[in-house]
Amino acid sequence: MLLATGLVAQEVQLTARSSRTSVGLDEPFRVTFSSNARGGELSPPNFEHFIVVGGPYRSQQTQIINGSMSFSQELTYQLVAQEEGTFTIGPATFESKGKRFKSNTLTIQVKAGVKRKRATSKAKTVGFEVAILSSKKEVFVGEPVVLLFTATLFEQVRDLNMLQTPNFENVLQQQLDFEQQSRRERIGSKIATVLDFDKRLIIPNKPGTLGGQELKITGAVQKPTGRRDFFNMPLMRWEQEVATAKIPAVKIKPLPAPQPLGYSGAVGELKLVRELSRTSVNGNESITLKLRIEGSGNFNTISVPDLIPPQGFDLYDPKFNEKIRYSERGVRGYKEYEYLLVPQFKGQFILPQMQWTYFDVKKGDYETITLEETTLIVTGDTLNASAAEGNGTMPKVQREVTSIDNDIRFLQEVDENTRHEEQPLLWIWAILGLVLLGWLLQLVSFNTRKKSPEAARAAVKKAINTAWKTNDPEAVGKMLNALEEELVRKGIAKENISLFALNEVLGTALGTQVNTLIEKLQLALYAPSATGSNEEWLNEFNALWEQL
Image 1 (cartoon, one colour):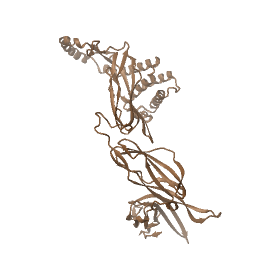
Image 2 (tube, one colour):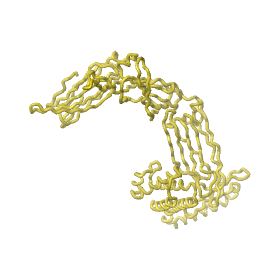
Image 3 (cartoon, rainbow, N blue to C red):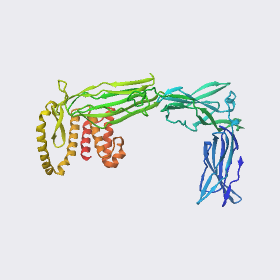
Image 4 (cartoon, helix red, strand yellow):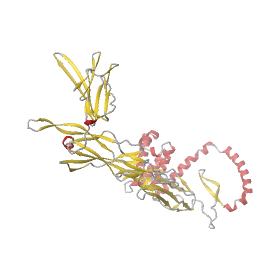
């Protein structure tokens, strides 16, 4: 080992030494920092132009010779050079009792001539080599590519490790979960083990050329020491080796021009699905609508299109659901918005047609999916009618507002054909109404106005109980939506509803009860066979509703 004298300050010695001063590319060497001081903090320098493939390894030693005690501690790193040239490794630092000490620097020469070349004789001297394979040579923007990392093992090798991950710009990179596979092959005159040890999914976001980078992979190779044990068996040791592999070039093609109007960037093999829980409801029922994109594609940038809602319904904020998995075939799964539609009038209403465009990588062209319009029928005596005239004229226009129980309001209907005949009379009524409104404002107290939220809560509770006792198949969903909407009003966003958030806002006791009921309802939605007492859940809801 080459030793360089360290700095000595107030009996503290700090030295740096290297196992070699001249190395080749991919050839590991050791750098050790030693100090004779106890305590303190020993910090290594920045190993610029080098990669740490092993360490840090720490060791301490105390010796007593003829009554004289000595102490030493060491910090060792195993490095590999990244490029050719002559480089300086800066000093290590040691801080103790407010004082700072520095070691000497080290000069390392990296020679290209030492870099190993691929040849049939390589199997005799090198423990392993690495290759990187790509699933495709050219793809469109947004189309996935799989990189397979394969190691050919000529000796016993363990702890294969990628020193740096592929660094691509404008690319989604995901390591895939898979079982490592090995097989035996003949390489030259020797049988070697070929091991598939890593797979990565690459999805480019911009056109250009992907690849060309060199990656370094390290591994511990078992080699003989040249000595034998008591039973005349060769003694072995594990040595770090580094192999270099180049990522193959992949051409990233831009999407064809011109792009269709309304195209939002979706690429893959995709479907747009619109699901309705029902198309005919009573006035006191609701409709669950799911708008979903499913299949395989660039889900990292895909957005579900906005729903075009039907007239005559109240549309509540949607619940977002997604399930995405990464595989060799790309990114597969779905993204969806789940809406709740509550009818406001009885009659027939149209859920409008929708169109959505994506780029089909299999066909190499843009595809437009059309969802045809759907007729929704609302019946029952609890709502007023709102439908188009039989002669094809415009539907009746809602004008006057009537209050029910000081809370629930619905719009009465006025025939558009009689609207102009009644305008003079409407002006008279408007003036009288303003006078009457001024008088009413003096009579209505703040306490009366405050009852509106309570009446709304009572109406929701009544609707939930009615749905539950009539065995409404949507009862579970309605109860879950009611709880979520109430928590939103208390300041907890839907996506942040958790036991921690509930306990923080509602308190531990009430928060735990609400969280338990929500989990039961969610389980019932996605696992209808789950056991549970419907009457018990309703009683829990009614009790919690009064406390919220």
